[in-house]
Image (cartoon, rainbow, N blue to C red; front, side, top):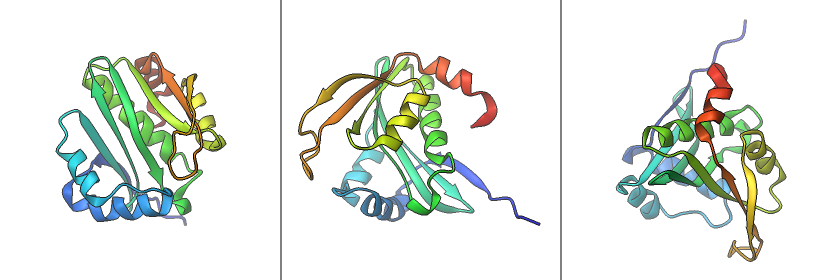
Amino acid sequence: MELQESIEIRRMQKRDISAVYEIECICFRSPWSKLSLLSELRNDVACYLVLTVDDRIVGYGGMWTLYDEAHVTNIAVLPAYRRRGFAKKMLLSLMAWAIQRGAEKMTLEVRETNAGAQQLYAGLGFLQQGRRPRYYDDTGEAALLLWNENIQATVASCGKMW
């Protein structure tokens, strides 16, 4: 008999900074500092969420909401927990939060070589609207600028599956 995992997405709190910083260090070549993460918690336009599996933080996501737009700053899931739909759940949760704050559309940047993330974003209605050459300092790699012009429709189309 297989035990059911307890999965929760909730607002990030100050006590979560160390676990989120660990995820940053594992997932990104140029991780944000603990101080940067803490300052985002104090930012009135920011919303940061953590995803827990059996009370362990295994992923997080953040965004800024300004007027009718939301900008995703980061989404990360620990490697051992990838390919299970957690990044999708996180992005849909960010969309739901953005809608509550009055956003109608969402934007994000993704590395040009990150095919897996690009596939996830395309499946959630994001379309490439631009390219930023040499965007990432660590590699000089370009970023693709993606937009979803109707996040409410995206959330509605995903129903209760997330």
